[in-house]
Every structure is written in structure tokens, then in C-alpha cells.
Amino acid sequence: MRIYQCIKEKWYRGERERVKVFNHLKTITYHKWLVCKGCFAVGLYRQGLLHDMSKYSPSEFWVGAKYFQGNRSPNNAEREAVGYSTAWLHHKGRNKHHYEYWIDYSLSGGSGGMSPAPMPRRYIAEMVMDRIAACKVYLGEDYTDSSPLTYYKSRKEPAPMHEFTKKNLEFLLCMLAEKGEKKTFSYIKRRFLKKAGKKR
Image 1 (cartoon, rainbow, N blue to C red):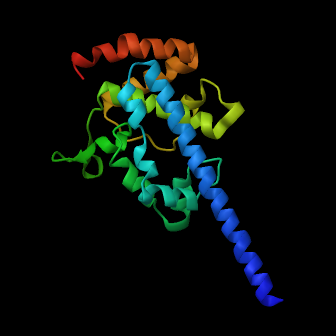
Image 2 (tube, rainbow, N blue to C red):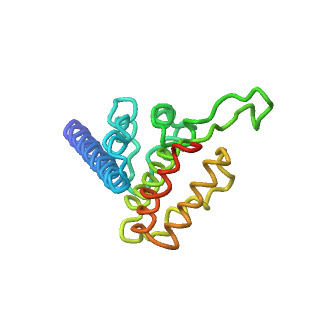
């Protein structure tokens, strides 16, 4: 009877793990599709197709599946479990739409010895799409156009972004909250990205 119980528990534990793997795959693919859709709307076709491909690598995928919860990033669950996120450390160094990718060492005594570099406009635009998609995935029907801005403002400490990156991200998130997705995407495509060749 005890052996039967052990086999039964092991089977159910394995079943739960298989469900988490499937749900994680479904979640990251849905997120990728939403970002791709947004990038295509503003003309960033290559970035849309290649967005977050590293999430399907073993270093990120299996960790994400292990800590999958469905209502928030598994990276935070991993941080709570071990103190840091191995998946995030792998991810941020391979995806240019994260401002953390653009943080370098400082030779002039910057904060903590680190110095953020300005993000090119096309990656700021992709970052906006990424934040919109993440909020849509985790908030579901509760999502509104102000959700990405609300989440951005919820940080306890300001993000270590370059002033150029911060100014443009906040501008676009405020526009999204006030004017909606259609007008914001139109502005990004017709004006924001057109300025890329002038300064950054």
C-alpha cells in the first residue's frame, strides 16, 4: 500500500510539472505574439520576429517552467527561492529591449560604479511593446492602457536608466495612458522612429 501511494504521488507530481511546462510555453509564446503584433504595427518587423527568442533556450525555459505561477514573472519566484534569477541574468544580456542590457562600467564614479548608456529608439519602442504585452498577459481582462505606466511607477526605487531612455519611455507610456494604443503606435511609427537617424 505504501509503495502504491509513493507511485501515485510521484505520478501526480510529474503530471503537475508537465502542466507547468505546457502553461509556461503557452504564456511566453502568447507574450511573444503580442510583442510581435505591436512591433509589426510600428514597422519593426525583424525585432518583432526575434523578440525574446532566448526564452526558449534551456537556460531560461526550464527555469521559467519550474517557477511558473501564471500571474507574474517566474523570475520573481526564482528570486524569492534562491535570492537571484539565473534566467534573468541570462536573458538581460541577450535582449536589447531591456535597459539593463545597456548598463556599463563607469570610469567617472557613476552610481555604484555603473553607467547606463542611451538606448536606440527602436529598442525603446520594443521595450514599450514588451511592457504592454507583459501587462496584458498577467492582468488579462483587467488590463487598461494605463496599466504599463502604473506598473512602471510602482517601482520602489527609480530604474538606473540613461536620461534619454527614461525621458522617452515615460513620454510614450504617458501617451499610451492618455491617448490609447492606436494613437501611440501611430506616433511611434510616423514620428518617434523617424527621429532615429538624427541623434539616436
